[in-house]
Length: 460
Ligand code: GDP
Image (cartoon, rainbow, N blue to C red; front, top):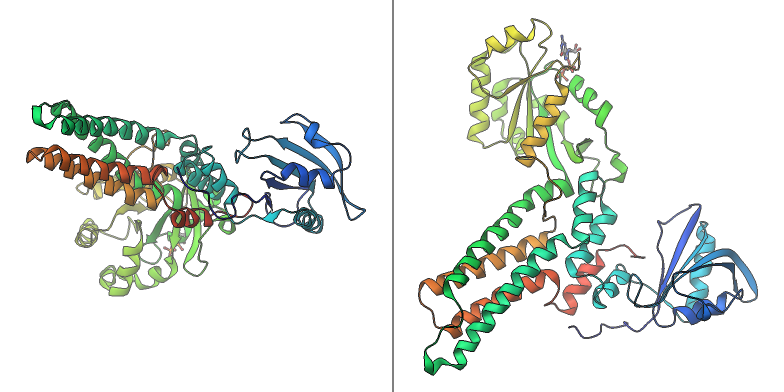
């Protein structure tokens, strides 16, 4: 395991609740002096004599002055979030009170926690593995039901379990191959090569599945840039309003939102569809030909999905065929949506466009088939049913590391194909194990840890 990090022995303190005004705030202390520090500020009773996992009401008194009436929760290590002694002080939510209590604990010997330091300690004390720790950050940042669920699933160790199983099997093989080396004179094979092939095949498919899930994971975590385009009067604003009425996401709560480029965000089945610069695109879509205009195309290409809306009464089947061809040339993930079916009725419209597959017919004004459009959008970006019970990779670091694991696993396979001697094969397996370990944190270094945990907010 790792050496202790700098400042690891300090008792750390931070406000664990959101900054600002609230009914209550929680101040969290973790470390070997948590009890003694808190005891000095809490005259009501001697906390060291109280059982773990109990609550105590009393005053926080510093320099002879009562700061607040609080409830103190005790978590004796190792049965705590960090694995150390943890005390949580629930005080009234005023920022002034919070600051006074923090100051008092610092006076008494605590130090302010760095971002993510509580979770970092939990990791270093073996309470969580690295993927679980990282998913704590995702969980806190999750802004939709789907991203919440994947983060939750990961925190419970879903992803790590799959990787641990793989790692265990590879370790066994590597051990057997190394055993062969000890008996090299005797020309024996302990490690069953067919078994190793089977393991590699199986592992490759597990890894590929995880790697593929990143696209989906990315969509779940970050949302997908969406453009609604079409000629003027196609009904874009009408459609947008209909969708927004039911599915507007709260923009201010979504991290990384640039108000300049993103107008609105829809939350459909927990997936965030970020509507990019639709106004700009709308203007330059005056004529269907102008879609060839470089700038517009660049904008459209930024989109993960493009909704092309047209007035079924105005455009001909040939117009649409040309449009589809243009999208195909530029490999644009698009959805064809024919609007205003109410004018002539849906049946007539279907006949008109009968030879063009995959057009969705709606009436934005009458709210007809809007649910079908939403389903189609989700289907387009997820490429199948969303099953957040499955393990989904949402973290770029895991994605990169998994690709390394896969690459090194292919090297092992190639080595076996070429009849590589056991010692070299064993090296390849070790490399593969190394990359696997990097994901779960069994192999790591201080810099990388600091980097990962620095992305947390303070108090976690
Ligand atoms: P935009 O220029 O693409 O944003 O189009 P608008 O949303 O402003 O709509 C242009 C006109 O078409 C407005 O008068 C809308 O009321 C009308 N419109 C939009 N959707 C429908 C529809 O489903 N049926 C009918 N009959 N009219 C619609």
